[in-house]
Amino acid sequence: MAQRTPLFAWHEAHGGRMVEFAGWSLPVNYGPGIIAEHLACRKFGALFDISHMGRFLIKGPAGSALLSRTLTNDVSRLRPGFSQYTLFSDGQGHPLDDAYLYQFKPGENLLVVNAANRPGDWDLLNRQARGGEELQDVTNMLAMVAVQGPGSEALLTAAGVEGLPPKGRGHTAVARWGQVELLAARTGYTGEPLGFEIMVPAAETAGFWEALIRAGAPLGILPAGLGARDTLRLEAGLPLYGHELHPERPILSLPRARHGVSLDPDRGDFRGREALTAQEAALRSGDFHRVPRMIMKVAALEKGMIREGSPVRFQGRRLGELTSGTMVPAWKFKGSTPGDETFTRALGLAYLDRDRSPGDRVTVEYRGREIQGEIVQRFMKPEGDYLRALPAGID
Image 1 (cartoon, rainbow, N blue to C red):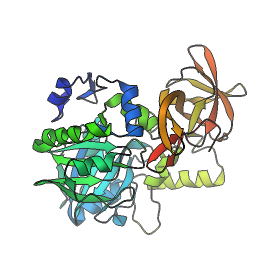
Image 2 (cartoon, rainbow, N blue to C red; image 1 turned 30 degrees about the vertical axis):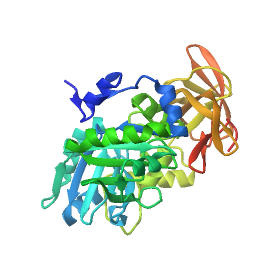
Image 3 (cartoon, rainbow, N blue to C red; image 1 turned 180 degrees about the vertical axis):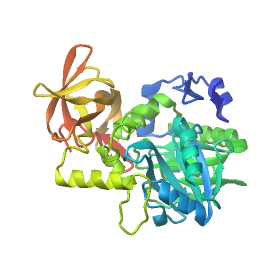
């Protein structure tokens, strides 16, 4: 039987279309549908139940040392009030998972991992332990919700949350909602300039969620499910484990992964360091052997669907294939803000030969039809508190 988050009953009672995902029962979407939820996030805001993500609490100096020799980023750089993107690597420099590490309080690290990889990550941490570490899996004790989009901060304030983190991506704070302690971070999986991920005691989650729903309704903010979460992360160019991050590929074939890998000579050894150092050297030198392909963004230049697995070609030569792809909605802007009209684009992330670059025209094949496309630097750009969709070929 699939596990249930503290909000399972709410999702069912409010029209959530429930599916099993990574061993959890979660909503794909609600009544308005994936497109409406996606667009609401970009123009107003959206709420996500992300309690399926794994959460590990690691305390004390021995716990920090464990994380330092297990994770790819430099844990010693963290201080209370900050967070960092990081990865679990195997000995060959291939990803076992990607994760986010938070420090809310002195001497405590909270590691958030992908739901499907939670058992393996927990096992690896315990195998790497040498004694004296304080490790606790708090996934079922501490729920997690995401509040994303331009209205997210106004929503949290209207719902009575106090002590939010200061402005700045990745900042964290111990906040409060009435008498309830919250762990709040300016992070998220939608790419939004404004957004928060909040950890709340499981027993308080339903009441907190209801307060967010009430405060969000007049602001145009909707609850959203897995469907919009996936289209939003794709549009933002963010990786999904098992798709862009794959256990058989070099970690540094994902450009974003460089933010989660520290090869500072002053830090100690960690799992995968030698292989990652070789990957970095290959990228600098132009050696295509260790890192032959990279994850790149591809936008269709004409109408047509593209999907994961679609072959991508340049002048007839196969470069690789899409790792993610679908139709993504967007707002047409009036000046510097979203207007009332929308459009859709076929967007994809692809694992392609490294000799290609943004501006190259390619074709993407789906069900026997070749769609004209272009490798692009990005799909969107920040516009104040909004994200603005970019036509292909414009940076």
